[in-house]
Length: 365
Image (cartoon, rainbow, N blue to C red; front, side):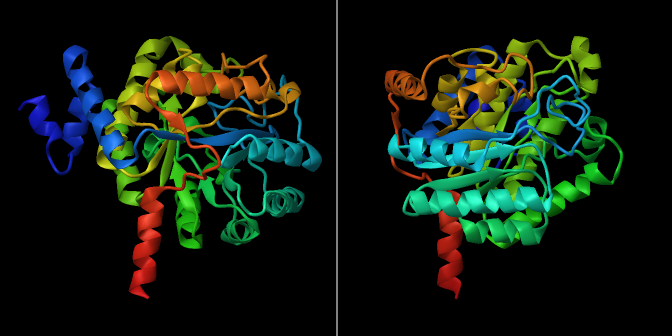
């Protein structure tokens, strides 16, 4: 069966996806050309910005892969003040970022929930309700999700990390705080509450197979996500999974596999938002631009105040910049122009998939 024939199928099976994940050379080029055309046809050449604010690296979780895990005692812990967050929000708003993304380690205390709530309300007030807000603050109760949505959050990114429960167990401690079902239930609660829901996986994990990755793609399609943030797994020396560093694919292969995952997700979910994540850039400087050419349509420039950025250290070789955020934005604009793309300044860039579902739901009432 030819590659062209497979790509023209109305739906791709698990076996099709496994085959496509293993393409190389000319077949890989054909795959990327095809996904790039699908992307242009459905979401165009506009790239939407999510100014990334790394709010806090405090975390109650102890995931085996993560550099800000609770047991990493070599890390300097921090939490931005609400004033620092709001100043950063105002910077984003005035420089044309249609949206921001507030990311943090996972906490569920009343103090944390109230802080996020106040930040949401004040961010909307300061921007006349115009700025879009994505939260990525881990598993919370449905009540908390609803409260944050009502206070101004528009989207929520909760990475499943892997859709395989067996593999998930190998990435986390076996206790009540790290249950696969908790993750699934949280994603269901987000969808029920009314968010634009995003998830994602790590690519190139220890113990991971092409079958796992094909299942990940099918999971995202079945769940009908609105956005995705996924990228290569990059090890961190202060984590338990670092033990398996010699068993991993080389970084370049993990990067290329990540490109194929982005391309295939764009093919099977043509109108969702897909981020070109920072982890791609940790392997190759221009990897985000490559991801945009083959399927991604969202960038998340880090606008966290500079003195905190090197403490939100999820993995080794995290890209850090000595440039001013304004200069970084100019650089991105130049890079995107070189690949015939443009930044959607002052536009939230909401998921077309979400908008269609919302429109359908309203028409049914």
